[in-house]
Image 1 (cartoon, helix red, strand yellow):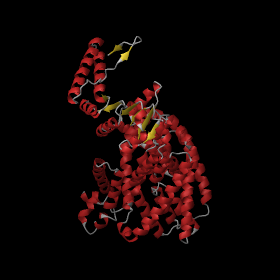
Image 2 (tube, helix red, strand yellow):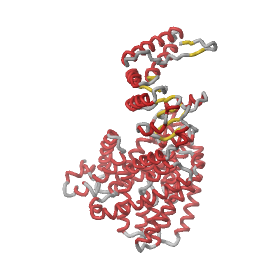
Image 3 (cartoon, rainbow, N blue to C red):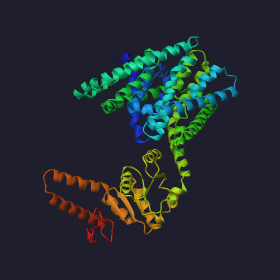
Length: 590
């Protein structure tokens, strides 16, 4: 039995599942992307790592994978499920709205980067035109699997990346025809595939609109998540098989399947039940990429390999950044997106391999650039982190003096999460001007698109607070979800601006007491107020009279005020929900 397991795909499956069980929680514990973990697993357990030693040391066999080819079907499934997940997050209306970005910026980015790489190849070596063209177009692609996994599709960076990556995925089919075949009928075959593919996709759209809703409705009546998962997999596999049969490739079918399900009312449930499988399949794909990295080859060619990879990445950063800026994207979004998409792609491996099999690229070229691509994919999470840091620097450098001058008479909100946004909405409702400050690039872009007055700034930096010149601000509101930073900022603001009203969000009574000692005018414990309101709703709903309920809530709030006053060693009792209201006669009510 043990021999059967070790000699079958079951052995590789056990190694992969064991790796996932270790990598995901371990890297989550240290807040590191599991993408790096899966790539490292592939590097360590693959043929160029411990797998290469298993023949001489049999005790390593249960812990290694000796053949990358045995994992390729699972890796392809990972890419298919990834495109399916992307389709679930889109809709036909949204996709139609992105058409100019996809076929405008997306086409210009890929073709522009390829043109620069092609020119460099022609200058530094005697490359045949077809070989240089195949390699340059392959290297111009970026990783759909990693970039959208990291950036998502809802953020400004994710939307910009998605528009370019969609064009690259669509371009894969003609690239495989032009550089993966050597016969003279390539163009004719391409026309045939496009025609048949169009008919198949139209048939899928029509069938999906009428068949999917009743199919998922029947699955919903059973209240079985397993049936939902089974139906979802059947749909995506059939769609991928249909487009693959006519030559379009399975990823197009998977994307269309996701789009069709996204148009139904069951898309949220499908997204939830398929998420673990999609994550595991992506992990398998990343392990196969890690297995491509030959450590022995890197040891000999690493200077040339790193130089070549750095050159490709530099070209893509410049071309992508300039095009996004020309297309109207913000400087921070352009900087982050261009760095995120700098490395080559999993589709680069597919195009290079096909060109090598057709004789367009030599075996040595295929091996060299496959290793460079695998290394670039491993660097993608690090590039994403670098892109975020660069975006922050760019946004900070562009801090507009006009925005700072407008602080006079405004309420300045530090932090623009859910609490800060609510405060801003209420200020706008009453016609009071405000300016919010936050360091989340993606959140700022979305908030500005929604019409909010938000500027980039890291409130933890003293220079940022000094630049705001809060002498003439109406008030400062601290909404950050960081108790230590809130307390430190409150103390700093009180020292610099003795008369400035400072209202702060507190975690609980103890945190509110610390904030009062730091000098805030008012501290609102969010957990406490929510608990009191919840208690009030419960008491009223179970039949307790409104009068006694309100009296008990006031009494409990008075006890909490006294507790905060004692713990914070305050001379005056904090308001804590008690507000002064003047009636028309000017009388004051507490």
